[in-house]
Structure formats: C-alpha cells, structure tokens
Image (cartoon, rainbow, N blue to C red; front, top):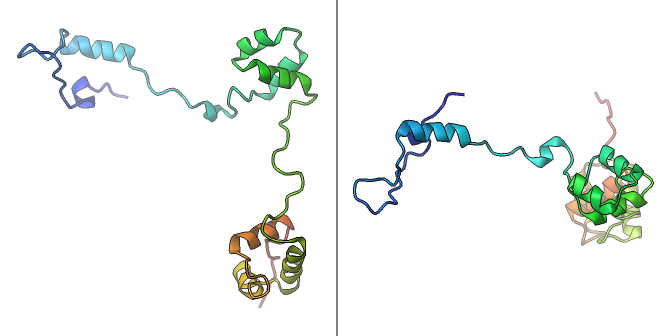
Length: 166
C-alpha cells in the first residue's frame, strides 16, 4: 500500500492556534508524515472474526478451566473472563454449549388442534405455502403466513417433495 500524505488523508485544515499565520503545528510536513507513519494503526480485528468471542471461550479454554486446580480468580484473570463464568465452566461435565430455547417448541398463536389441521391439510394436498394459507384462512381466521410457515417447519413439512412431472 502506498504511503498517502497527511494532507490527502485529511484535506481539511485545522486552525487551532491563536497566533496569526501559524497553524498550530511546529513540525515540518516531513516530520508530521514520519510520525503519522510510525504511530498510525489500522482498526483492530473484530473479535468475532476469529470464531468465538473471548467471553464465551473456546472449547480448549473450557477444557483447561475444567482440568485446572488453580483458583477461580487466577483462571479468570488469565483468560480475561468473569470469575462467575469460570465457576460455571468448572461445574459442567462437557465443553459444549447448553441448548437454548424451549425444550419443546410450540406455537403461541395456534392451538394443538389447529396445528394438526394445518399439517394434515398440507400432507394431503401438497399445496404451496400461499395456497395453503388462502385455503385455511376461512377455517382459521387468525392464521398468518408467518405462523403457517413456522408450523410447517416445526412439523417437518415445509418443503414440498420433488415430484417429476410431464
């Protein structure tokens, strides 16, 4: 990458000195360029670009925490995480994340009976999503496209089977 000059990087001029004719800088343009080149740093790399954030820890760090005999405070300082996180990982038997979300996903909009009607209708007719929606809305007036799609995904019938035709 070519070295850009200070003036091309910052075309505006900051006059902050109260003495007329002096721009507030006692450095020559060469000295200013040398300082810029020496101390300029690019933006730091994103923590998320390396995979996991340091607070959640990699599996190797989690394993090291679980097998270590050192105190929580020492481990927390070494890995840069909260001592409560270290305590949590010491208690666990696995290095994998615990599952998130509900144990049994269910609809907050549709009843169990309405979901059964939707799934049976889809399996019987094999209609696309929008056609199912328009056909079922007279029966289930509060049915929305998103609720229908989530219901079909939950029951594994959101994708229509590939049927070879003429």
